[in-house]
Amino acid sequence: MKRITSLVLSLCLLSGCGVPSIFSGGSATAETAAPTLPPAPAAAEQTLTVCNAAGRAHASFKALEAYAEAQGVTLEYTEDLQQADLVVSCQAPADDGSWYNLASDSLLSAAASKAGLDPSASVTALPLGKTLYAYWADSRLLNALLGEGCISDLQNASWEEWSGFVEALAAWITEPAETSVTLNGTAYTLPTEVPAEAQNLTGIFALPVDGGYGSWGGPLYTAAVLAAGSEPTAETLEGPLTGLWSALELEFTNATYTATPDTEDWNDIGIWDVASCSQLLSWGNAVFLRASLSDILANTDADFAQNLVAIPVKGDYLEEDLATDEYNLAGLMNYPTLAMADWLAIPASADEEGRKAASSAILWLYTDGDAQKLLTETLCMITPWGTASDATTLGAQQVAQVSTGILPAAEVQTTAGADVWRAHTEGDWGTEDRDAFVQASTAALLGNQ
Picture 1 (cartoon, rainbow, N blue to C red):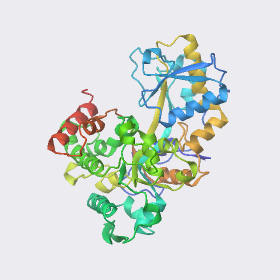
Picture 2 (cartoon, rainbow, N blue to C red):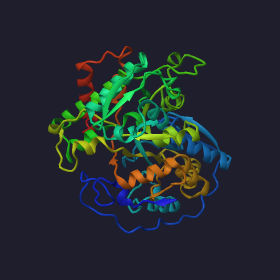
Picture 3 (cartoon, helix red, strand yellow):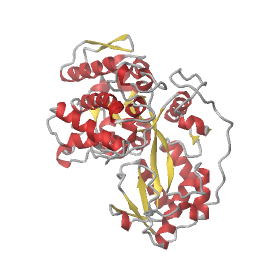
Protein backbone atom coordinates (compact mmCIF):
# COMPACT_ATOMS: atom_id res chain seq x y z
CA MET A 1 0.00 0.00 0.00
CA LYS A 2 1.34 3.40 -1.00
CA ARG A 3 0.52 6.78 0.51
CA ILE A 4 0.30 9.65 -1.97
CA THR A 5 0.48 13.13 -0.49
CA SER A 6 -2.53 15.39 -0.78
CA LEU A 7 -0.57 17.84 -2.92
CA VAL A 8 0.18 15.16 -5.47
CA LEU A 9 -3.50 14.19 -5.46
CA SER A 10 -4.56 17.68 -6.44
CA LEU A 11 -1.68 18.03 -8.91
CA CYS A 12 -2.92 21.17 -10.59
CA LEU A 13 0.55 22.63 -10.17
CA LEU A 14 3.54 20.46 -9.36
CA SER A 15 7.30 20.60 -9.60
CA GLY A 16 9.89 17.94 -9.02
CA CYS A 17 9.37 14.16 -9.17
CA GLY A 18 10.44 14.25 -12.81
CA VAL A 19 7.28 16.04 -13.89
CA PRO A 20 7.57 17.98 -17.17
CA SER A 21 7.71 21.76 -17.09
CA ILE A 22 4.04 22.15 -18.01
CA PHE A 23 3.52 21.91 -14.25
CA SER A 24 5.14 24.60 -12.15
CA GLY A 25 5.16 25.87 -8.58
CA GLY A 26 4.47 24.05 -5.31
CA SER A 27 6.25 21.10 -3.82
CA ALA A 28 5.35 17.90 -2.03
CA THR A 29 4.66 18.31 1.67
CA ALA A 30 5.50 15.98 4.53
CA GLU A 31 3.24 12.97 4.77
CA THR A 32 0.64 13.09 7.54
CA ALA A 33 -1.27 10.14 8.91
CA ALA A 34 -5.04 10.04 8.42
CA PRO A 35 -7.11 10.01 11.62
CA THR A 36 -8.12 6.55 12.81
CA LEU A 37 -11.82 5.80 13.08
CA PRO A 38 -13.46 3.15 15.26
CA PRO A 39 -15.11 0.23 13.42
CA ALA A 40 -18.38 1.05 11.69
CA PRO A 41 -21.51 0.31 13.74
CA ALA A 42 -23.84 -2.44 12.64
CA ALA A 43 -26.60 -1.37 10.27
CA ALA A 44 -29.63 -0.09 12.11
CA GLU A 45 -31.88 -1.99 9.72
CA GLN A 46 -31.36 -4.71 7.16
CA THR A 47 -32.42 -2.62 4.15
CA LEU A 48 -30.55 0.32 2.58
CA THR A 49 -32.35 2.32 -0.12
CA VAL A 50 -29.90 3.91 -2.54
CA CYS A 51 -30.60 6.55 -5.16
CA ASN A 52 -28.92 5.24 -8.30
CA ALA A 53 -28.65 8.50 -10.24
CA ALA A 54 -24.97 7.79 -10.93
CA GLY A 55 -25.82 4.54 -12.73
CA ARG A 56 -25.50 1.10 -11.19
CA ALA A 57 -22.66 0.12 -13.52
CA HIS A 58 -20.38 2.50 -11.62
CA ALA A 59 -17.73 1.24 -9.22
CA SER A 60 -19.47 2.88 -6.26
CA PHE A 61 -22.29 0.37 -6.53
CA LYS A 62 -19.89 -2.56 -6.55
CA ALA A 63 -18.50 -1.15 -3.30
CA LEU A 64 -22.00 -0.85 -1.82
CA GLU A 65 -22.86 -4.38 -2.94
CA ALA A 66 -19.74 -5.63 -1.14
CA TYR A 67 -20.90 -3.81 1.99
CA ALA A 68 -24.36 -5.34 1.76
CA GLU A 69 -22.95 -8.84 1.34
CA ALA A 70 -20.50 -8.45 4.21
CA GLN A 71 -23.06 -6.99 6.61
CA GLY A 72 -26.16 -8.93 5.61
CA VAL A 73 -27.92 -5.85 4.28
CA THR A 74 -30.41 -5.79 1.41
CA LEU A 75 -29.93 -3.00 -1.11
CA GLU A 76 -32.95 -1.43 -2.73
CA TYR A 77 -32.61 1.08 -5.55
CA THR A 78 -34.67 4.12 -6.36
CA GLU A 79 -34.47 7.07 -8.72
CA ASP A 80 -36.47 9.19 -6.28
CA LEU A 81 -34.10 11.12 -4.04
CA GLN A 82 -36.87 11.68 -1.50
CA GLN A 83 -37.23 7.93 -1.00
CA ALA A 84 -33.50 7.26 -0.56
CA ASP A 85 -31.41 6.70 2.56
CA LEU A 86 -28.15 7.17 0.65
CA VAL A 87 -27.42 9.06 -2.57
CA VAL A 88 -24.45 8.41 -4.83
CA SER A 89 -23.57 11.69 -6.51
CA CYS A 90 -20.99 12.79 -9.05
CA GLN A 91 -20.39 15.97 -7.05
CA ALA A 92 -20.74 17.10 -3.46
CA PRO A 93 -24.26 18.59 -3.33
CA ALA A 94 -24.68 22.26 -2.49
CA ASP A 95 -25.58 23.13 1.09
CA ASP A 96 -29.12 24.14 0.19
CA GLY A 97 -31.03 22.50 3.03
CA SER A 98 -31.75 19.33 1.04
CA TRP A 99 -28.96 17.34 2.65
CA TYR A 100 -28.18 15.98 6.09
CA ASN A 101 -25.10 17.63 7.59
CA LEU A 102 -22.74 14.68 8.03
CA ALA A 103 -20.59 16.74 10.41
CA SER A 104 -23.45 16.70 12.92
CA ASP A 105 -22.76 13.01 13.54
CA SER A 106 -19.60 12.39 15.59
CA LEU A 107 -18.39 9.39 13.57
CA LEU A 108 -19.19 10.91 10.19
CA SER A 109 -17.52 14.13 11.35
CA ALA A 110 -14.38 12.10 12.09
CA ALA A 111 -14.69 10.51 8.65
CA ALA A 112 -14.87 13.98 7.12
CA SER A 113 -11.64 14.91 8.90
CA LYS A 114 -10.04 11.72 7.61
CA ALA A 115 -11.04 12.73 4.09
CA GLY A 116 -9.46 16.17 4.52
CA LEU A 117 -12.76 18.04 4.82
CA ASP A 118 -13.52 20.68 7.45
CA PRO A 119 -16.11 19.27 9.89
CA SER A 120 -16.59 22.70 11.47
CA ALA A 121 -18.49 23.61 8.30
CA SER A 122 -21.52 21.83 6.87
CA VAL A 123 -20.51 18.58 5.13
CA THR A 124 -23.07 17.46 2.56
CA ALA A 125 -21.16 14.43 1.23
CA LEU A 126 -18.04 12.31 1.66
CA PRO A 127 -15.84 11.29 -1.28
CA LEU A 128 -15.39 7.63 -2.15
CA GLY A 129 -12.02 8.05 -3.85
CA LYS A 130 -10.24 9.09 -7.03
CA THR A 131 -9.34 7.17 -10.16
CA LEU A 132 -7.65 7.75 -13.53
CA TYR A 133 -9.83 8.75 -16.48
CA ALA A 134 -8.58 8.17 -20.03
CA TYR A 135 -9.01 6.02 -23.10
CA TRP A 136 -8.31 2.50 -21.88
CA ALA A 137 -6.98 -0.21 -24.18
CA ASP A 138 -5.64 -3.76 -24.04
CA SER A 139 -1.86 -3.46 -24.37
CA ARG A 140 -1.70 -6.88 -26.07
CA LEU A 141 -3.99 -5.68 -28.86
CA LEU A 142 -2.06 -2.43 -29.40
CA ASN A 143 1.27 -4.24 -29.51
CA ALA A 144 -0.12 -6.82 -31.95
CA LEU A 145 -1.34 -4.05 -34.26
CA LEU A 146 1.66 -1.74 -34.10
CA GLY A 147 4.56 -3.43 -32.33
CA GLU A 148 6.49 -2.75 -29.14
CA GLY A 149 6.95 0.88 -28.14
CA CYS A 150 3.65 2.02 -29.61
CA ILE A 151 1.93 2.66 -26.28
CA SER A 152 4.26 5.45 -25.19
CA ASP A 153 4.04 7.00 -28.64
CA LEU A 154 0.24 6.81 -28.61
CA GLN A 155 0.23 8.53 -25.24
CA ASN A 156 2.38 11.36 -26.58
CA ALA A 157 0.91 11.65 -30.07
CA SER A 158 -0.32 14.96 -31.44
CA TRP A 159 -3.95 15.45 -32.43
CA GLU A 160 -3.08 15.08 -36.11
CA GLU A 161 -1.24 11.82 -35.44
CA TRP A 162 -3.96 10.49 -33.13
CA SER A 163 -6.87 11.24 -35.46
CA GLY A 164 -4.88 9.96 -38.45
CA PHE A 165 -4.21 6.70 -36.62
CA VAL A 166 -7.89 6.24 -35.73
CA GLU A 167 -9.01 6.82 -39.31
CA ALA A 168 -6.31 4.51 -40.69
CA LEU A 169 -7.23 1.78 -38.23
CA ALA A 170 -10.93 2.10 -39.07
CA ALA A 171 -10.12 1.55 -42.75
CA TRP A 172 -7.82 -1.34 -41.82
CA ILE A 173 -10.59 -3.09 -39.87
CA THR A 174 -12.80 -2.94 -42.97
CA GLU A 175 -10.03 -4.04 -45.34
CA PRO A 176 -6.75 -5.16 -43.71
CA ALA A 177 -3.68 -4.04 -45.61
CA GLU A 178 -0.20 -2.83 -44.75
CA THR A 179 -0.79 0.74 -43.61
CA SER A 180 1.71 3.33 -42.39
CA VAL A 181 0.93 5.63 -39.47
CA THR A 182 3.01 8.09 -37.46
CA LEU A 183 2.77 8.45 -33.68
CA ASN A 184 4.89 10.91 -31.70
CA GLY A 185 7.09 11.28 -34.76
CA THR A 186 7.74 7.52 -35.02
CA ALA A 187 6.63 5.46 -38.02
CA TYR A 188 4.54 2.33 -37.44
CA THR A 189 2.88 -0.10 -39.82
CA LEU A 190 -0.44 -1.87 -39.42
CA PRO A 191 0.01 -5.48 -40.55
CA THR A 192 -1.18 -7.10 -43.75
CA GLU A 193 -2.67 -10.04 -41.87
CA VAL A 194 -5.08 -9.67 -38.96
CA PRO A 195 -3.32 -10.83 -35.77
CA ALA A 196 -5.15 -13.16 -33.40
CA GLU A 197 -5.63 -10.37 -30.84
CA ALA A 198 -7.58 -8.34 -33.44
CA GLN A 199 -9.85 -11.07 -34.79
CA ASN A 200 -12.94 -9.74 -32.95
CA LEU A 201 -12.51 -6.05 -33.81
CA THR A 202 -15.70 -4.42 -35.07
CA GLY A 203 -14.76 -0.77 -34.48
CA ILE A 204 -12.44 1.61 -32.65
CA PHE A 205 -14.38 3.04 -29.70
CA ALA A 206 -16.76 1.46 -27.23
CA LEU A 207 -18.94 4.47 -26.52
CA PRO A 208 -21.14 4.66 -23.40
CA VAL A 209 -24.18 6.77 -24.18
CA ASP A 210 -26.14 6.47 -20.95
CA GLY A 211 -25.41 10.11 -20.11
CA GLY A 212 -23.61 9.03 -16.95
CA TYR A 213 -21.16 11.41 -15.32
CA GLY A 214 -18.32 8.92 -15.67
CA SER A 215 -18.39 9.25 -19.45
CA TRP A 216 -19.82 12.69 -20.11
CA GLY A 217 -19.20 14.85 -17.05
CA GLY A 218 -16.32 16.81 -15.60
CA PRO A 219 -13.43 14.50 -16.53
CA LEU A 220 -14.28 14.74 -20.24
CA TYR A 221 -14.17 18.54 -20.08
CA THR A 222 -10.94 18.82 -18.09
CA ALA A 223 -8.51 19.84 -20.84
CA ALA A 224 -10.98 22.34 -22.33
CA VAL A 225 -11.64 23.93 -18.93
CA LEU A 226 -7.93 24.17 -18.12
CA ALA A 227 -7.22 25.67 -21.55
CA ALA A 228 -9.88 28.33 -20.94
CA GLY A 229 -7.99 29.75 -17.96
CA SER A 230 -8.64 30.13 -14.25
CA GLU A 231 -11.76 32.25 -14.87
CA PRO A 232 -13.39 30.76 -17.99
CA THR A 233 -15.76 32.84 -20.07
CA ALA A 234 -17.92 31.98 -23.07
CA GLU A 235 -15.21 33.52 -25.26
CA THR A 236 -12.30 31.54 -23.78
CA LEU A 237 -14.32 28.31 -23.77
CA GLU A 238 -15.41 28.43 -27.41
CA GLY A 239 -12.10 27.36 -28.96
CA PRO A 240 -11.29 24.55 -26.47
CA LEU A 241 -14.85 23.18 -26.62
CA THR A 242 -14.68 23.16 -30.41
CA GLY A 243 -11.44 21.16 -30.08
CA LEU A 244 -13.15 18.75 -27.70
CA TRP A 245 -16.04 18.36 -30.13
CA SER A 246 -13.54 17.13 -32.73
CA ALA A 247 -12.54 14.37 -30.32
CA LEU A 248 -16.17 13.37 -29.78
CA GLU A 249 -16.90 13.47 -33.50
CA LEU A 250 -13.94 11.13 -34.02
CA GLU A 251 -15.47 8.76 -31.45
CA PHE A 252 -19.01 9.02 -32.82
CA THR A 253 -17.97 8.21 -36.38
CA ASN A 254 -15.68 5.33 -35.38
CA ALA A 255 -17.70 3.69 -32.60
CA THR A 256 -18.71 0.04 -32.52
CA TYR A 257 -22.11 -1.24 -31.50
CA THR A 258 -21.57 -4.87 -32.48
CA ALA A 259 -20.79 -7.40 -29.79
CA THR A 260 -19.07 -10.74 -30.34
CA PRO A 261 -19.47 -13.32 -28.98
CA ASP A 262 -23.06 -12.17 -29.48
CA THR A 263 -25.87 -14.09 -27.85
CA GLU A 264 -28.33 -11.31 -28.68
CA ASP A 265 -28.49 -8.06 -30.58
CA TRP A 266 -27.32 -5.34 -28.19
CA ASN A 267 -28.65 -2.70 -30.56
CA ASP A 268 -32.17 -3.87 -29.68
CA ILE A 269 -31.42 -3.83 -25.95
CA GLY A 270 -30.15 -0.27 -25.96
CA ILE A 271 -28.10 -0.64 -22.76
CA TRP A 272 -24.98 1.23 -23.76
CA ASP A 273 -23.46 1.98 -20.38
CA VAL A 274 -19.95 1.48 -19.05
CA ALA A 275 -20.79 -2.13 -18.16
CA SER A 276 -21.70 -3.22 -21.70
CA CYS A 277 -18.88 -1.14 -23.20
CA SER A 278 -16.39 -2.73 -20.79
CA GLN A 279 -17.47 -6.09 -22.20
CA LEU A 280 -16.87 -4.85 -25.75
CA LEU A 281 -13.36 -3.88 -24.68
CA SER A 282 -12.63 -7.17 -22.94
CA TRP A 283 -13.98 -9.23 -25.86
CA GLY A 284 -11.70 -7.35 -28.25
CA ASN A 285 -14.60 -5.77 -30.20
CA ALA A 286 -13.27 -2.25 -29.54
CA VAL A 287 -9.80 -0.79 -29.19
CA PHE A 288 -10.56 2.07 -26.78
CA LEU A 289 -13.06 2.89 -24.02
CA ARG A 290 -13.16 6.39 -22.53
CA ALA A 291 -14.03 5.93 -18.87
CA SER A 292 -12.78 5.95 -15.30
CA LEU A 293 -10.49 3.05 -14.47
CA SER A 294 -12.49 2.00 -11.42
CA ASP A 295 -15.69 1.78 -13.48
CA ILE A 296 -14.04 -0.53 -16.01
CA LEU A 297 -12.59 -2.68 -13.22
CA ALA A 298 -16.06 -3.03 -11.70
CA ASN A 299 -17.25 -4.60 -14.95
CA THR A 300 -14.37 -6.72 -16.27
CA ASP A 301 -12.35 -9.76 -15.35
CA ALA A 302 -9.38 -9.04 -13.05
CA ASP A 303 -6.91 -10.90 -15.27
CA PHE A 304 -7.93 -8.93 -18.37
CA ALA A 305 -7.72 -5.68 -16.44
CA GLN A 306 -4.02 -6.11 -15.70
CA ASN A 307 -3.29 -5.59 -19.40
CA LEU A 308 -5.04 -2.22 -19.57
CA VAL A 309 -3.08 0.90 -20.46
CA ALA A 310 -4.20 4.55 -20.43
CA ILE A 311 -4.11 6.79 -23.50
CA PRO A 312 -4.94 10.42 -22.60
CA VAL A 313 -8.08 11.95 -24.11
CA LYS A 314 -6.89 14.15 -26.97
CA GLY A 315 -8.64 17.05 -28.70
CA ASP A 316 -8.01 19.34 -31.65
CA TYR A 317 -6.79 22.22 -29.47
CA LEU A 318 -4.90 25.16 -30.94
CA GLU A 319 -2.27 27.46 -29.45
CA GLU A 320 -4.67 30.37 -29.81
CA ASP A 321 -7.22 28.41 -27.70
CA LEU A 322 -5.04 28.70 -24.61
CA ALA A 323 -6.01 31.38 -22.08
CA THR A 324 -3.54 30.11 -19.49
CA ASP A 325 0.20 30.06 -18.87
CA GLU A 326 0.02 26.97 -16.65
CA TYR A 327 -0.44 24.42 -19.44
CA ASN A 328 0.74 23.99 -22.99
CA LEU A 329 -0.90 21.86 -25.71
CA ALA A 330 1.28 18.82 -25.08
CA GLY A 331 0.49 18.95 -21.38
CA LEU A 332 -3.25 19.11 -21.98
CA MET A 333 -3.16 16.10 -24.31
CA ASN A 334 -0.45 13.82 -22.94
CA TYR A 335 -1.71 13.22 -19.39
CA PRO A 336 -4.73 11.31 -18.08
CA THR A 337 -7.18 12.96 -15.71
CA LEU A 338 -7.52 12.17 -12.01
CA ALA A 339 -11.26 12.08 -11.43
CA MET A 340 -13.48 11.70 -8.38
CA ALA A 341 -15.16 8.29 -8.38
CA ASP A 342 -18.31 9.46 -6.55
CA TRP A 343 -19.64 11.21 -3.44
CA LEU A 344 -21.87 9.67 -0.77
CA ALA A 345 -24.63 11.85 0.67
CA ILE A 346 -27.69 11.44 2.90
CA PRO A 347 -30.85 13.38 1.95
CA ALA A 348 -32.41 15.55 4.62
CA SER A 349 -35.65 13.67 3.89
CA ALA A 350 -34.21 10.38 5.24
CA ASP A 351 -35.69 9.37 8.62
CA GLU A 352 -33.55 8.42 11.61
CA GLU A 353 -33.39 4.72 10.72
CA GLY A 354 -32.51 5.56 7.13
CA ARG A 355 -29.71 7.90 8.27
CA LYS A 356 -28.33 5.15 10.50
CA ALA A 357 -28.41 2.66 7.64
CA ALA A 358 -26.63 5.09 5.32
CA SER A 359 -24.08 6.05 7.98
CA SER A 360 -23.22 2.39 8.56
CA ALA A 361 -22.50 1.94 4.84
CA ILE A 362 -20.32 5.06 4.62
CA LEU A 363 -18.36 4.20 7.75
CA TRP A 364 -17.82 0.61 6.63
CA LEU A 365 -16.28 1.89 3.39
CA TYR A 366 -14.04 4.25 5.38
CA THR A 367 -12.93 1.83 8.12
CA ASP A 368 -13.23 -1.85 7.19
CA GLY A 369 -10.06 -3.62 6.08
CA ASP A 370 -11.86 -5.63 3.40
CA ALA A 371 -13.44 -2.42 2.13
CA GLN A 372 -10.01 -0.78 1.80
CA LYS A 373 -8.73 -3.79 -0.12
CA LEU A 374 -11.74 -3.68 -2.42
CA LEU A 375 -11.40 0.05 -3.09
CA THR A 376 -7.64 0.23 -3.56
CA GLU A 377 -6.79 -3.18 -5.02
CA THR A 378 -9.90 -4.46 -6.83
CA LEU A 379 -11.17 -1.06 -8.00
CA CYS A 380 -7.82 0.78 -8.10
CA MET A 381 -9.10 3.84 -6.27
CA ILE A 382 -6.97 6.33 -4.40
CA THR A 383 -8.62 6.91 -1.05
CA PRO A 384 -9.53 10.42 0.13
CA TRP A 385 -6.72 10.13 2.69
CA GLY A 386 -4.17 9.37 -0.02
CA THR A 387 -3.56 5.62 0.09
CA ALA A 388 -3.36 3.53 -3.07
CA SER A 389 -2.38 -0.04 -3.84
CA ASP A 390 0.59 -0.98 -5.98
CA ALA A 391 0.01 -4.70 -5.38
CA THR A 392 -1.08 -5.28 -8.99
CA THR A 393 0.46 -4.26 -12.31
CA LEU A 394 -2.38 -1.83 -12.95
CA GLY A 395 -2.27 -0.40 -9.44
CA ALA A 396 1.46 0.19 -9.71
CA GLN A 397 0.93 1.93 -13.05
CA GLN A 398 -1.62 4.26 -11.50
CA VAL A 399 0.62 5.13 -8.55
CA ALA A 400 3.48 5.87 -10.94
CA GLN A 401 1.26 8.00 -13.17
CA VAL A 402 -0.17 10.07 -10.32
CA SER A 403 3.33 10.61 -8.97
CA THR A 404 4.47 11.75 -12.44
CA GLY A 405 1.67 13.94 -13.73
CA ILE A 406 -2.08 14.12 -14.23
CA LEU A 407 -4.74 16.71 -15.01
CA PRO A 408 -7.14 17.63 -12.18
CA ALA A 409 -10.71 16.81 -13.24
CA ALA A 410 -13.10 19.66 -13.88
CA GLU A 411 -15.98 19.67 -11.41
CA VAL A 412 -19.07 19.98 -13.54
CA GLN A 413 -22.01 17.78 -14.40
CA THR A 414 -23.20 18.05 -17.99
CA THR A 415 -24.41 15.47 -20.49
CA ALA A 416 -24.20 17.76 -23.52
CA GLY A 417 -22.12 15.25 -25.47
CA ALA A 418 -24.49 12.37 -24.75
CA ASP A 419 -27.52 14.55 -25.51
CA VAL A 420 -26.12 15.40 -28.94
CA TRP A 421 -25.32 11.72 -29.55
CA ARG A 422 -28.89 10.69 -28.83
CA ALA A 423 -30.14 12.99 -31.57
CA HIS A 424 -28.48 10.80 -34.22
CA THR A 425 -28.61 7.24 -35.44
CA GLU A 426 -26.43 7.38 -38.54
CA GLY A 427 -23.44 9.37 -37.30
CA ASP A 428 -24.03 12.27 -39.69
CA TRP A 429 -22.32 15.03 -37.74
CA GLY A 430 -22.25 18.66 -38.77
CA THR A 431 -21.92 22.28 -37.73
CA GLU A 432 -25.31 22.34 -36.01
CA ASP A 433 -24.28 19.47 -33.72
CA ARG A 434 -20.98 21.14 -32.88
CA ASP A 435 -22.60 24.47 -32.13
CA ALA A 436 -25.28 22.82 -29.97
CA PHE A 437 -22.60 20.98 -28.03
CA VAL A 438 -20.49 24.12 -27.50
CA GLN A 439 -23.50 26.15 -26.38
CA ALA A 440 -24.88 23.51 -24.00
CA SER A 441 -21.45 22.81 -22.56
CA THR A 442 -20.68 26.50 -22.08
CA ALA A 443 -23.95 27.00 -20.20
CA ALA A 444 -23.20 24.06 -17.91
CA LEU A 445 -19.57 25.04 -17.29
CA LEU A 446 -20.52 28.62 -16.44
CA GLY A 447 -23.40 27.52 -14.22
CA ASN A 448 -26.09 28.90 -16.50
CA GLN A 449 -28.17 25.73 -16.73
